[in-house]
Amino acid sequence: MKAIFISDTHGKHSDLILPEGDIVFHTGDVSSTGTISEIEGFLEWFEKLDYRYKIFIAGNHDFYFEKEEEHKIKKIIPDNIIYLNDSGIEIEGKFIWGSPIQPWFFDWAFNRKRGEEILIHWNLIPENTDILLTHGPPFGILDKTVRGVHVGCEELQNIVKKIKPKIHAFGHIHEDYGVIEKENCTFVNASVLNFNYKLVNEPIILDI
Image (spheres, rainbow, N blue to C red):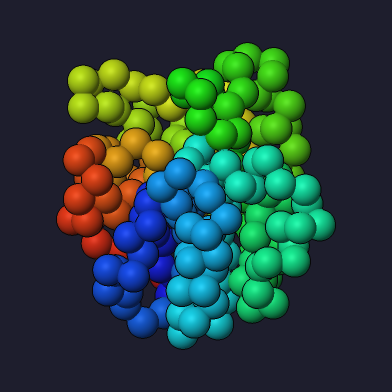
């Protein structure tokens, strides 16, 4: 399968030019402020994309998914879209897990304190995970801010080393967009917006 990875569209999804493929992954921050109208606008666009599978997780801007009740969230998500929230799904023999959780970051959504609090979520990731989607990066991998500081999650880094997924995709740190191979895993920071929230980065394409 040809997989397309995007992240951190922040409401600018309609300006994207997406390549052809079989599956598209969005690793969070589909909105700017997380209102229901922004979320519905994204879902309407995402639903119409011409991919066999469409999968997304929420990010720290997507307050609606943190504050709203689960049954109401399910009600607004179209049938041809897969939303993962500390949950997984198997597609064509590949197990995919997604989580919006991130280390505490100001007063945004899905914040957890580093250490035991955030580790509760990472311990949910099954060992048979082939493709891992998180909003934030693991520590030391495509997680460097414009100030040159690594802000990824140490606990997530340890879990990834243990589980060894084939692909770990994320976003959140716009300025460290890119792809690297490390320890038999392909790490993808798919942020399409740069530090100044300008749409400058291309969707990332991988063969699965």
